[in-house]
Image 1 (spheres, rainbow, N blue to C red):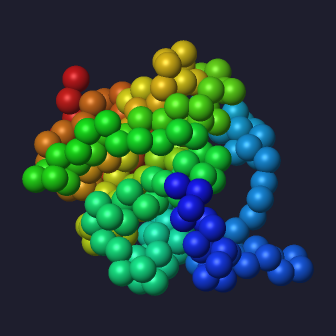
Image 2 (cartoon, rainbow, N blue to C red):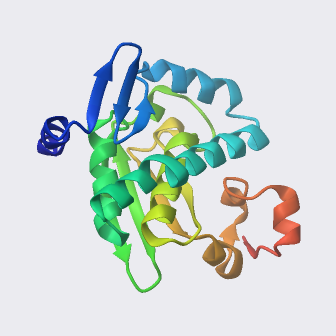
Amino acid sequence: MFDMFKKLLMAQQIKFEEGNISFLNSRVLIAPSELFINLIEKFKDNESICLELYRASKFCNIKGFADEVSIKYKLKQMELAKWLVNTGNVSGWGKIKFTSEDDSNKMAIIEVRNGISEKVKSKIPVDHFLRGQIAGGASAAFDIDFDCIERKCMAIGEDCCEFVVKPRKSFIKDGISKGFAGQIFSKDEIKKLKVKILK
């Protein structure tokens, strides 16, 4: 995994310039995890803001980093998805791994341990930034609009965080539990899109 970064450094794909760090032509910042933890703590009970944090994170991965990697290295589908997971592992988001993949339904379950949410106390899952990164990465990898829910979270006392990622249309047609619907749909969207809500 760290060999990947050595190769990128040698190929000058990670650049350190005065006032700027770029990684595959995307500007990146080195920031303490407390920045994200404070944002999560401040807005964890505001469903509409959490939805916007998720969407912003998703969009920046689709139109930024994941797209750049896909073009530069001609990676698609699971090859790109796995590359992005490895990048998440070395970028401080936690120990990320696929625990289940269903290629026919384009669905995966991803587990994260040692993530930033273990420092948060909450009654509901809180990893909106990481969910967005996962959904954006999958969307870029497969050229389909993906979404991601967090069904287990260390912030609520579980031993790991667990994410389900699959095409957005699957969440609409096949249904989504009422407890998770707000992670990816606003109340207006649930009505407008006729999202099937499961008990």
